Image (tube, rainbow, N blue to C red; front, side):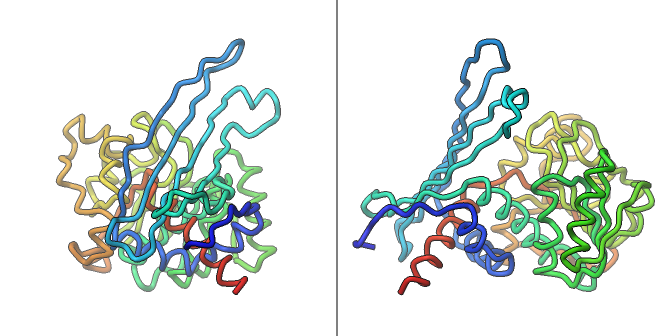
Amino acid sequence: MSDVSLELINTEATVAGLPYGALVDALQSGFAAGCTVPVRHHHHIQKRSEPDATLLLMPAWSKAEDQDQFLGVKLVTVVPGNKARGLPGLTSTYILYDGVTGQQLALMDGNVITSRRTVATSALAARYLARDDAKSLLVIGSGRVASQIPDAYRAVRAIEKVLVWDIIPEGAEKLVRSLNDRGIVSEVVTDLEQAVGKADIISAATLATSPIITGAWVRKGTHIDLIGGFTPKMREADDATLKAARAFVDTREALREAGDLVQPIQSGVVAEEHVLGTLADLANRNVNGRTTTDEITYFKAVGSGLADLVAARMVYQQMRAERQ
């Protein structure tokens, strides 16, 4: 990587560099190999006449023994006041560096990196945890991340039908129209209890602060994927759901950041040992994923700089390969 020049990779090129099947495979290799991922940095930004903002920095870099050396930092601004301006509240940028020289290699769309690696991480977990014959997927939510869940899951399972539920019905209807237009058989559901009870895979990507999935609704053999709850105060599934399931996480940070684990552990419903392993454990075959067809499996992710680095490296390397 001696012939270094800074590449500006736009949204469309970032999307094109991250096809879901290849991204899931790259994440599997990445979690198996590991990298250095410091704790993310949170910086408080005071504002006048509007809510305060936050700057997040998420760094990660290759291990010293890796053949290809990369370093990356995702910068995220969270500005709640942007809602009044008609602008997105969250903006992400990813900077990729040569891990040997520290020189900048590429600047790319961090929003695309985040959303695509998020759903691909969930799909990777499903490769180990969902039944091989899973055909129906329930998506809870209809936002940017939720809208990409079906495509990611179709990379690892033969999904024949997608059900969509959202607290705002118009959002679910819009997503279903988009999916059907692309040839993915989908329908809006209004009875969440009934939908949970018949889906093979349930994937939630919401901002819920109290559970919307009830354990009594979940049938045997279901895989539950919780994407949305990324703070200790957020919940997408109740205690009974967790207690009934074999639970896994993307990284151990989830035990400190995700309300779906923090709250039941603090209240004594389960111990930390109830979480059987991480994606690295699954990828390295240190723990078993699904062991029977009738067990309930549970995956909770909070996001990782490792997944960001894997995705950014993939975009950059594919771009370089296309030019050769």
